[in-house]
Image (cartoon, rainbow, N blue to C red; front, top):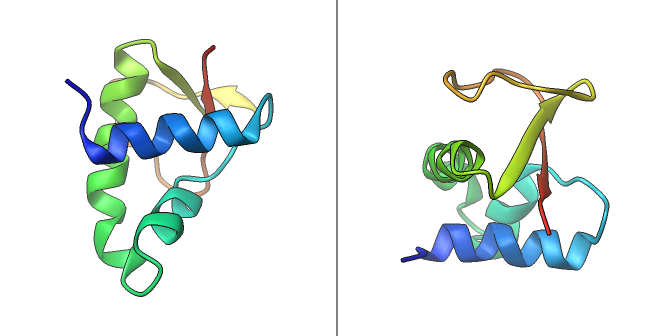
Length: 80
């Protein structure tokens, strides 16, 4: 069963089409006033979705290791 963060990531991917997007965009969309407080949960959900094969997560154009939390700027792409 999808949670609200997973649903939001999938919806952001639908809106982005073939373009990648930043997890911060999801946080700002859902929680415009308090988005920094939700980044840890968004990153956790993002990595679960990556391991489940629903999205790809990349850094500098290269897929990251799905077993470690990335540091620095990352991009998400929803697999259609």
